[in-house]
Length: 422
Image (tube, rainbow, N blue to C red; front, side):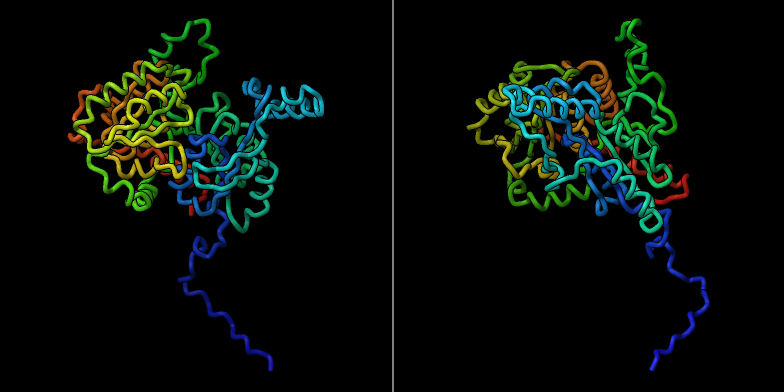
């Protein structure tokens, strides 16, 4: 006997909206992140994706430059040209005594995503991303593309050019020119320091035409105070649980010291390490515990001085760089922070907690880094670390929420295209 097929009931006006059935082609439910492999670039991409609620449907791609040998001298080239030269040199000098000079001892590979909790990532493939965005648009909806870093610009702009009806492209960090290649550009306010009166005075008139950006931010530019990151409230709650047994029993207050490394705009040496040691010695009596961490950029001569001074101190623990990385646990359980002035990322993360943040080394910073620190001081989110502080005396401020504010603006601009973020 054939089954009886009853007629469908007429519409009642109470059907489930398309956004919940998966049939809408105007709902952004997936994201592609393109980064360079640096912890800061990865964290900025993932921080924005998390703020938009798309972290569960994310594909992470990485732009990787050839490394080792002569390649270390070719990073000034556009990445496409760098890769082409690398391939030509490898073919030309293969099986010759010059191969080591060309290739070095480092393998050319896509590094893993250890900092962001990813075991592996994909090398960026523009054609694949574009084809997927086009072919699955009707079923899956638009694709959000978030890219960060100078080397990602050519890839993200190409994706928007080839699939503008199917993607929404966000470039994090200022691309310096032709901002109309992207739907949105997210960049710190201090990237426009060159256009300020102080910035103009620091640049000789002869060179001003070569300093970017040349124009004030347009409508597709979203300005932030610092760097985006993934240390949001949800991540810190999970970190607080994960690190409870190790960090909760420590005597309070817990002071976290994050040490970066010198940069072109914030140059220092062992002089800052000695200054930090002196100041820490002065505040140790007001601390219950102190935990010190170094970054990838910390010179060995600086870390050696810190180790020599504090390795045997009963109140001080120095992270040795071995996994697991306690960074998120430190952000969650700290009562106060001391951060070197060179790292915008570490400062942005610390300032998102609302806890006291002390900065050391701002006198070594110049150009837009000095503008960044001035902005933080004016907002009352940081104070200089002098060694005269009583760490037990806490103070607070409205936490920086750059990622949340950028996500709000992204939703507004996407809505103007008739799309929503699901």
